[in-house]
Length: 133
Image: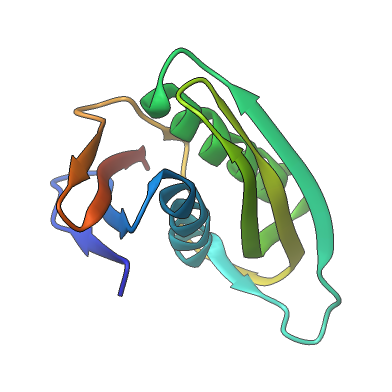
């Protein structure tokens, strides 16, 4: 599995891995979606463009996931698939396929920068990211 939940005293901590930076953005979106709820399997998914800019990969990831959180809160939709077309050190651009939520679960207040670092490893990219509950 490309992600796992790690113990944290009060918040949600996920460790996400992927072969490369674009893959890490995809896996982060999908791992976060699993925490937020369950999409309706009978509802049609809609493609939604997502483009964020930032000063580094960490800021990009926070902006990327925050946009998904906003969609969940305002429209009650969850990612079911993602693709990345552009992934540089300062820009992340792709398409997120979203479906209406059948059930919403964890209430996340914010995606945080706490101890956030995108790391290059022998196996690819890894990040540990904390979500404020």
